[in-house]
Length: 113
Ligand code: AMP
Image (spheres, rainbow, N blue to C red):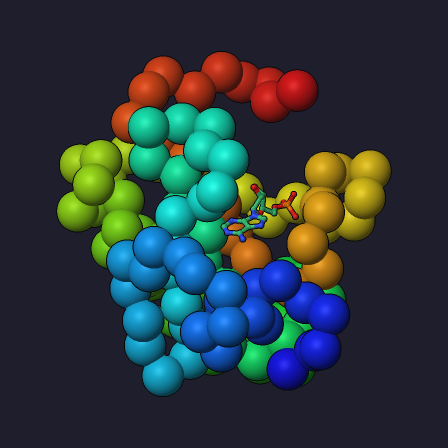
């Protein structure tokens, strides 16, 4: 856990969120500023700075995260979705706790902005 990390606060229950899936290794909750009708953030319970750090240290949890993302999309959007890992400030990462965005429920443009 990281003391000043917003996602660690959500995982601890110190900050409210709408949790949609909770397992022993990952938590999925609705994004506070949704960019699509379905916008769920899936995070590892343990603090890692980004997806590359998570992959290096704990690939099994990354596999769980991807599986949970697919389950959410299956349940909420018939399995059609985009899974995004913004990595680094120039790529749009603003919370430095590894997370995947599940975006679905509308036609998604390509390439992203
Ligand atoms: P990123 O910009 O890729 O790091 O994604 C961070 C995401 O976390 C953004 O889409 C934010 O809207 C979302 N976010 C920030 N604070 C909260 C919160 N308290 N509850 C839910 N989502 C949040």
